[in-house]
Structure formats: C-alpha cells, structure tokens
Length: 209
Image (cartoon, rainbow, N blue to C red; front, side, top):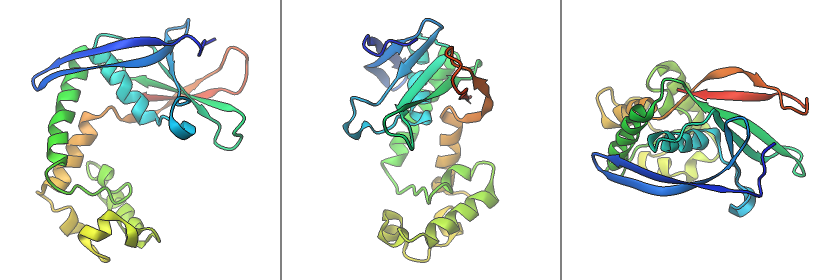
C-alpha cells in the first residue's frame, strides 16, 4: 500500500560539533508508519543495500524524523521483471542524540580515512572488532582471489601481504575499523519476518542497532 508516484522530501538539518549536515532525502510514505526508498532513478537501477538504508534512517533520526522503518525496494535478484522488498529498521535505543553522536564519530573517521590507506581485504576489516579468526580467514581468501593481483590492495601491500603487518595490534589500520563498526548502525539479527497484506511470501526484517 505504498504509492511510489507520490514522493515526499525530508529536509536534513543536523547540528554537529563539526558543523551542520544539510540536504534532503526523498521517501515514500506508507499508511502503517513505514517509508519506502527505491533505486529506480539511479543509473542501472543499482540496489540500495540495507546498510545504506540504515544510514539514511540514521540521518533522519538525527533530524528528528522517526519511522517504524523503511521498505527498501529493488529489482528481484533473479526475475528482473519483478521487485523485491527488504524491511530495514533502527533499533529502539537509537534516539536523536545517539544518532547525532554516531554521525559525529563517522565524521572523525572520514578525516582519518583521507589521511592513510585503510584496506578492507574483503570482509576482514569489519571482523577485526570481535572475530580475529574470521578476519584472518577473510584476509587469506581475499589474497587468494583471482581479482587480487589487479586490486588497489595488491598495489600497496604487494602479492603476499602479511595480516599482522597490514593490521598491526596498535595501528590505526585496526583501530579505525573497530571504531567504524561501533559508529555505524550494524545488523543485529533477523528478527522474524513481515507478512504483506496481500498474503504473499513474508519478507525478512533487518534490525540495525
């Protein structure tokens, strides 16, 4: 029951200790407290991933707009003549003040990211906070990948990088990603599903905290 022909523009105006974040986000209201976003005005209809949808909700929360969540609409992965929806929500503990604090942390991290190389190595970097073994495995998988020799990581760290050199225990390369994980709203878990009113297949619900 979301009319995608009636967009609504939400002004973003957030005062932070680093200055004002301003702009706008175009969404589509639903009668049950959700809003929708879609990529159909983008070149190639590139999907809005769930992390981007959660970040948009963070901008909205920091500006004083609160919704049940967003219905993230995109093309079906296999059947290109159909659409698919993902329900994305912020956790209930993220209020306006917390949203602003997280955005200020992201601004600080952005400044760091512009000063030194901060490699991802696949999923390795985002696992550094609480899954050292998983980070090492993801690092090894990335280095063995066929695409690695042509990557920027290979250009900087060479064909046989050492995990402990790339992510030293007390280096910014490690502390940056630990801070990033804590600043971003991150996927907590799949918390059940939502059954659409037309009784079609239930859609997963993604909750970011």
